[in-house]
Every structure is written in structure tokens, then in C-alpha cells.
Image 1 (tube, one colour):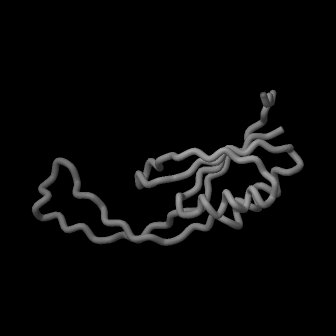
Image 2 (image 1 turned 90 degrees about the horizontal axis):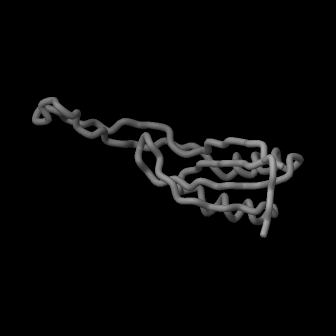
Image 3 (image 1 turned 90 degrees about the vertical axis):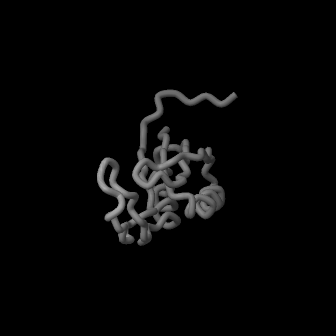
Length: 109
């Protein structure tokens, strides 16, 4: 048995949840916050048999796409903010960060 931990952007979470249920995966959905942009993420916990891990990864890959987004950087701390003019910067967001972990025991009560 394996535990898949997938961190995805909020924009992709509802689509991924529906797709996982459509493919008969049991999923626990947790709200989380990203560290870099401090934006909303969703963390999925998916317990599955080892032979279904590749199918789960395929479903995640198909439903969590990266995209370009413009952000405006905050003014630097400790400097003179009067002369600081922030310009939007294009960054890549989205996609999924996925961890596949072994499960020693599984109990369902």
C-alpha cells in the first residue's frame, strides 16, 4: 500500500477531486497555504494499492497544469520605499508537487 500526498493549487483542486472520485480513488482533501506566494493550496491524501499508483499520478498530471501569472513584488524591508517602484513579474504557478510514501500498516474503523 502507498500514500500519495499531492499539493496542488486551489484552482485545480475541485477538478482533481472529481477526477479522483471518477477513477474510484478515496481522497482526503486538506486546505493548505503555500510558502513562496502565500497563496491557497490544497493537499490531497490518497491511499491506494501499489499497482494503482501510476494511474493516480496520471490523473493528477492530467488535472493539475502549471500556468503563467503576474505578481507585483512587495517593497523591500529596511530600504527607502519612497523610490521603490514595483514592476509586475511573470512567474509559473500551479501544477502539483507529489510525494509517494510507503505505508507499513493501514486500519479502517
